Length: 346
Image 1 (tube, rainbow, N blue to C red):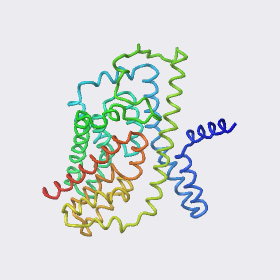
Image 2 (tube, rainbow, N blue to C red; image 1 turned 45 degrees about the vertical axis):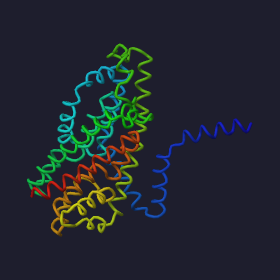
Image 3 (tube, helix red, strand yellow; image 1 turned 90 degrees about the vertical axis):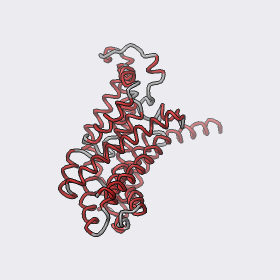
Image 4 (cartoon, one colour; image 1 turned 60 degrees about the vertical axis):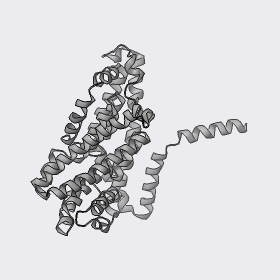
């Protein structure tokens, strides 16, 4: 009797969803302590989920279709052996794609679940949230054409650093298992191919004619929708709170002469203080006018865009720990180097 009770308890613990509980607790606390903020956070979260929904649904559908039809094997196989070309293309494409740090997560999940090599995905993953066409135009309007061009070049460079750096880590053998299967078991199929590429099954483009493949499609789609949806929801809830409660004094602390200390501090402060790319532009413009070096401003925008708390939560939920650590390291190092280079060049 006691054994069966413990078994059921263990099963309940394994099925316990800490993310959903965290979201519920945050809103319960807000309802009792700050009802107006609870309403504001709910509206902010729903609005952002609505904005990202087309990308979320499209990527979930593509990943589920690829898995159900067997096309994921074909896609993974087609990308093998071309990383030296794929990485620069991925970095360039990411710099001009209209995705934010959280909005890009569903697409990343789809790419990795289809077996696209993690080195190429890392290049796109890092460069995508840092620049896009509308961001470029707004950057020109707030910080000038020179700054916008430099940020675009730095974005591509960080993508290249992440892509080729990941490739070097994989070839060195460091945490090879994690990089070969970068996704958590809770999302997608994971992997860069493995046995799925070496022993591909026949592709059934019209998978809906087979009951087993239909079941695989809906199971994969619902599993990924819940997994990605709950983590994106938590990220947007936390972002809504950061906008209100993160003090401006944290950000003003990074004003400096453009040396290594102030630029490194800009990268660190960007993690908790960065809100979103559009809100950060006028903020950095004001700080530069108050004495912050343009190099520190560059670092703040680059590091914050890739390593803000909402973005890190999304990456942490999606990828295995070594991949998560590599993502943060490349983003931090790349942003610091970009800030130093910009300080020297200007």
